[in-house]
Amino acid sequence: MSKIITVISFLFFWSHSNYAQQEQDTETIKYTNPILVELKPDIPVMLTDSLSILLTGFSHKRPPYPGASGPTKTSVQLSLSKGNSCGKIEVCRYGLQGKTEYTYAPSLWNEYEFKLKDFDFLLSFKVMISKKEDTD
Image (cartoon, rainbow, N blue to C red):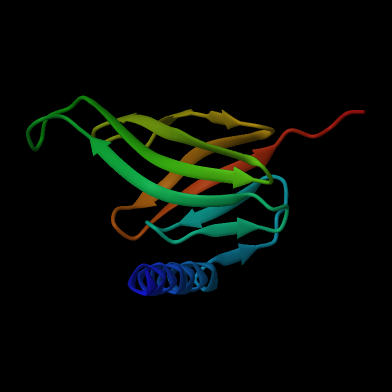
């Protein structure tokens, strides 16, 4: 019985130290409406209005061979939380190979709208976040 308690205690303290380390790595950013936020894979960002954002994945699709023209799609997967609400969304940007005009497909979560604006693969992704203003 004492071995079980020892193992449970070890797991508790180990997971707590990992959680504490993750919280320490969280970047806090002052929220303005709208705001351009730079996200990096697996590094949480907290806005001062309590929205927490974690970039969990990304993809880039383009024509199958070099030099070909055709559509491109870049997307990021985000895990979000604020208060008691949690969710996941995908934010996409569409374009044509070799062109600089893009179509932004916004994603909505609670009172927020997210648009993928720019990216530097494996380093960072810039997402525009705007919040619906209350008109009460």
